[in-house]
Figure (cartoon, helix red, strand yellow):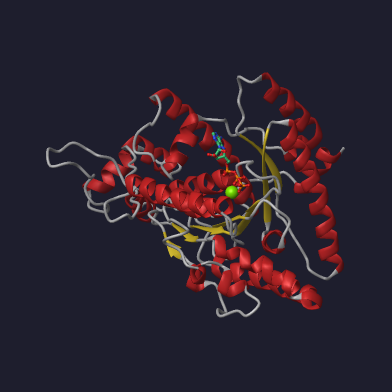
Amino acid sequence: MDAITSQIGDLADAGERMIERLRRKAFLPESRKGLNVRFGIAEAAQLLGCSTNRIRMAEEDGRLPPAPATDSGRRVGYTVDELLHMRDVLGASPARAPLDVPAIVAVQNFKGGVGKSTVTTHLAHYFAVQGYRVLVVDCDSQATTTTLFGFNPHFNITREETLYPYLSIDPTQADLLYAVKRTPWPNVDLIPSNLELFDVEYELAAAGADGQSVLAARFRKLKQGLIDLARDYDIVILDPPPALGTISLAVMQAANALLVPLAATTPDFCSTVQFLSMMDQVLRQLEGAGIAVDYSFVRLICSKFDANDPSHAMVRAIMEQSFGPALLPVPILDSAEISHAAMRMMTVYELEKPIGTPRTHKRCRANLDEALGQIEQLVRQGWGRVAPAREEDVLSVAAA
Ligand SMILES: Nc1ncnc2c1ncn2[C@@H]1O[C@H](COP(=O)(O)OP(=O)(O)OP(=O)(O)O)[C@@H](O)[C@H]1O
Ligand SMILES: [Mg+2]
């Protein structure tokens, strides 16, 4: 290798050292990320759908432990763990009934940088705050989602901890249980990823004439593995890579719902149309090969929407015209709070206090709750908890 080419490796090394420094700074001394968010009693009551009085009474009569307070008696609010316990005691858990099918949502678009990983992680933490049991599966070898959960994919994750041993051409695991990791969130687990997951794609190319059967086997495997795991969760969220490859195809097939993020820009709109058309072709081919794909909902969500940018409003109008009600009405707003949180390898739901002004933070959080709440509604419709709009109607209006 000549001197200039070998500099690429030096750049990578320098970058890796910096990532590790940033991570150490962002996390606790034992370099394990903690979760320190707390909820005041009014917010807790709102989340549980009960009165503050009901919580106080349960604390007084001993059904719940006393409200957490500092030594000086100041109330400090409830942790996510305490909220979960409160839900159990007060019968306020939103969890699905045993026979309800867990939602397996693919957050997918072949366009890069549209916000897939941002939506995946915020969706996971939104559902967790609401009291659901969540599994996040990082299917992208870039491992952004893994990083946002506080793991350094390069240093903390080995190939054996990713989907690889299960999806490999020479599998060393028969189910996915080995890969499930706890996260700082008591009700969110993660299957992490790292660069080596990309070997799954290489192997297929090397399989030559056997490629088709390898591919079909992987489709079946990912779907079955996730269905088995999903028994312990209300929602499974899949973050696939931004390209049409083996893993993307397997994700498409394993999911039972599809969420497509895109920014309100012309390039994102055009690429997303291409993505939908490619997806349509793939789904038809799969069907022809006897592989059924069945989604309970298909929605597009505008990510990074800037209300102050007239071009965003224009492109959003075009998107509305094209997609009708398949485009979720509330977009995720572009917010410095989201990008600042990402710099600290966190989601907005993990911030103990605002990074920007309290107003920016509050606005961002309220928007996320509303935008992601739309997806919660769709998931609950699947369980018959909310009267559904007929999915066929939504999509046919969109197509008209
Ligand atoms: N609503 C938002 N407000 C501000 N920044 C955002 C928002 N959504 C995403 N971003 C930023 O945009 C960038 C791309 O987002 P993200 O990594 O989620 O996209 P992606 O689709 O997963 O990308 P890739 O295709 O590389 O996997 C990130 O820097 C992220 O912090
Ligand atoms: Mg991503």
